[in-house]
Length: 42
Length: 230
Length: 224
Image (cartoon, rainbow over the protein chains, first blue to last red):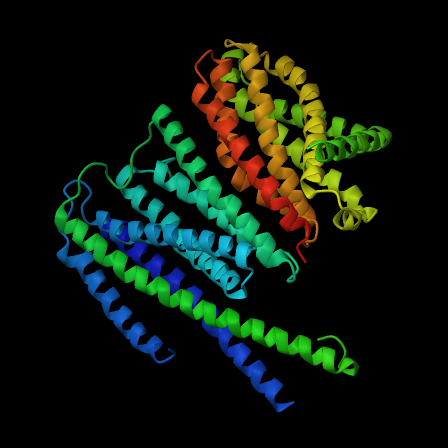
């Protein structure tokens, strides 16, 4: 890997980690929303 | 309040893109390391952001110990989690930077080592929160957070002395920094701080919602015992 | 001041008596310590010169393992007999309980260390170039650092899931500066070099963490 390859890898890893974490927040949020809909119906 | 979120989101995205451009294009190329040095503009701001978040965790934990307000507990949890995320970024971009520059993936450099220890402390904090039963978690976690925060000066002192006894390659460059590079560094730090704030805000809302739902469930099984336990 | 120390003394004596009576626990701990030393000696078989460089680290890692096993033991008995709830409702100050437990653990772990050390000296042909009293000082300060935090975290782990793994999981990261100090000072003393910085760091660490653990113990004991 050339120098630029490492640079790209570092920036890519940073955003992969952040987006993955945001992804878990979003999916838990939507699951909760569905659960609330279920609770409301009862 | 809720309307501010998307606006801030767009602004942060713009700021991050600008900061990225500055880091990759506008910032001067470093003499010895070349383009790889630009990792610096992501590595260092992530570290600073993580440290700030861990400090917020400390303050929130102390506040919880004194006032016992649930909001303080949520802030403590959120800041620790997001802090660990940023800390992970630091620990991965560090070796990616070290490899082409020094030929090694890891060095017991002061910054990397102390960041690793911090990461370990706050990951153990997150484990405690995960494994303890919900009634007492906030108090136990707050106590652990105080101990962990008190440990930080010891971490720095011990590793500093250890490194002066056993010198290792220094990462991140010692000495003065080119003012243009400093400018780009600060812009990236500002951008990532805004980003961290938004992530914390999202996580806070999620946690608040989760706790409200849990309370609703608890209330439900209290009011209607025939339904049984959830 | 006399009442808390009285309670500490009584609780400590009770614990020591119980440990002495449950010979099984002591015997298994002793044998475990021996095993650790032997396994380490098989794994690292250095010359006498090299051993002085690495013995410090090896010994303290061995002590660390022994301490964790010992710490897990001491609270387990309390839970079995629901003694913890009795402590909570008694008027005795929680600090006394904490000091008693910590002192008891300290004595217990020190006994284990005292037994493991001659074995290490023999297997590694160790000869200290520096003053031996400094080694003893490091042993006391280092053991106290492990035990004071260990007792606190053991109490914390009591009501968590996977209790046995929680203790080392919480203890190790926070102990890292202390472990570094223990290892570095032991290595320095063995090689006849100065260890003053590390000893002072260790003493400061002990002071700070003992104080904070005492301050916070009541909170975590009554957490519900």
